[in-house]
Amino acid sequence: MGKRKRELSEFGGFLVTEIRRAGMSKVDFCTAVGINKPYFYESLTGTPPSQEILEKMLEVLNANLPAEDKIQANDLLDKAAKCRREIPADISDLIRAHPDQWNHIRTVLGEMLFTAK
Image 1 (tube, rainbow, N blue to C red):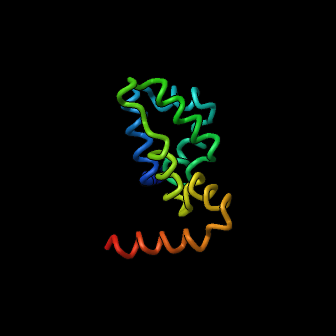
Image 2: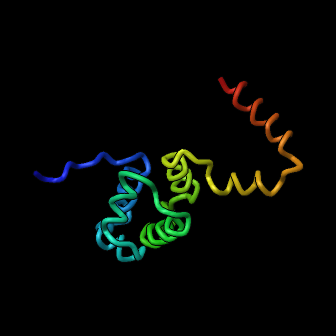
């Protein structure tokens, strides 16, 4: 029996599209990022890679895209966090760095989320 092909996550689909836009093969991308193929394929269908690897992926992709087509860091990082069911690291860091503002953050988030409906 052969291996069953796993479905790409939202992050994985985004990454594959961006690799194509950058004109790279998946093998060339893995080599440039410094990751092996099993790790790469797991990150397409399962858990996205660490923040450090995500930043390297972004660097490699943007080095191969024209200036007007560069990927915004938040696009890649937000999709990875969403796939992990986590808050993006930059947002978490901002919140963690301002504990004296947590009640205000709760209020503002509540207003944003409940008035947006």
